[in-house]
Image (cartoon, rainbow, N blue to C red; front, side, top):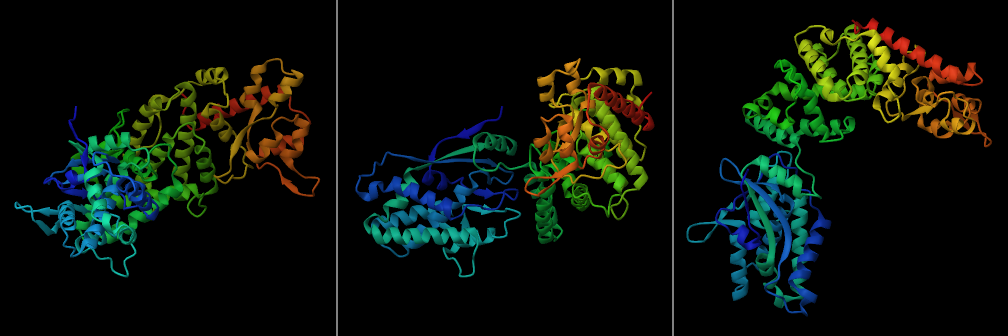
Length: 579
């Protein structure tokens, strides 16, 4: 178990420690505190250090807790800051503003306070004298264009007129607060910074490694945004592109890529950039011939051999290309994809799990041409086959973990330019038919909506829905209808696939509890009493049923269920998935 060095310290004890050499590492996010946070900090420490605006005596034994600082000592003995970047940076700016205000004050208290602040901001020689060229904090944040401004402010104590960074704004804010304080409480001037240094407490937690420090941060921090895997990867890219003289280009491209991924990926866990790295990881795994169903954590995968994969220019270019592919999928780009491809991709968006996005990413990366395009027929056959396989496996072998074995094997086949066949995992028609017949397609199971999406687009006349359309599961024979007239011989038929369809939420809210004859106008659309046109459904099958039937009975449920199952078996057969 990793050892931790944990010992509560005053600001003075922590900052004046000979070992204090803080580094805001390149993978951290840019400094984010603004005037609101600085005002809160100032108000809190002022109320603590000058109780009741000086009318109450200060208790020299009192303490004010400012929070933890989580660090680890890196290979060059600097303390990389994992948690506490914002408060550490802000405290340095505050102390520097106080130091500058003392100027040439020669009274004993002012001289002593200024000397204490010096030893907090600058390193000292063996005689305890500050070295004004050696700060106790440094910043290498890759995407923070203003970090040099921060260091310059600490060195000079001056904010230039044209400087507009958060560092400059916050430094000016503290200067104004100190000016106001000095004007109102001149006799207390040396007391405030002294009490901040002597009585404001930090909890430095020094971990043995970056991994341990990151875990501690995730455990402790309930307000800040924890560092993601992609933040760590960004730092590695930054070092690589800095070495080849393309640092500025990389920073711009990284920011563009972050904005793009935020617009197209919405993962349940991790960041949008993490999701992109995950999809690319499966391509690299396949290239390495890895079929194991055990998947490494994202950072563990990329950190192999000292992040060698992230020290190649083609890796970052691949990530950009892959992101733009998924952008076109999400935007249903008709210039890149044909209508039949877009229909297949739409159905896959209703897959019972996210595994399809990984295998499609592998297929794209392997088979794209020089313009980033795919062969139309080859891609269509691939999408059709994985749809049938993933849908069937969700019923016969439920759980995404079970799906890993066949899918990972096919990923390796893809990168070896072999066709996707699932040759070792084909299904028996009788077994599939039996399992589907005995499977309860209730609404809480993702495969239910998956099957309905597949069925909807078996209709050649079905137009494409925009991906942002909210589709819900409609009971054609309403559940409330059964509660009222009990006209089904078997209540289980309410939840049969033959009684369900996808319907836009805006319609389903109104149509859910009506008898079929009453639902017809909602499926078809109508003009209400206010002469407002209410659009009908774009589900072609429901629209057709509303035009050809006056009622939807138990026999219709059974017939439709049988038709769906027969067509699904035909689909598996056509795609070579049956033995």
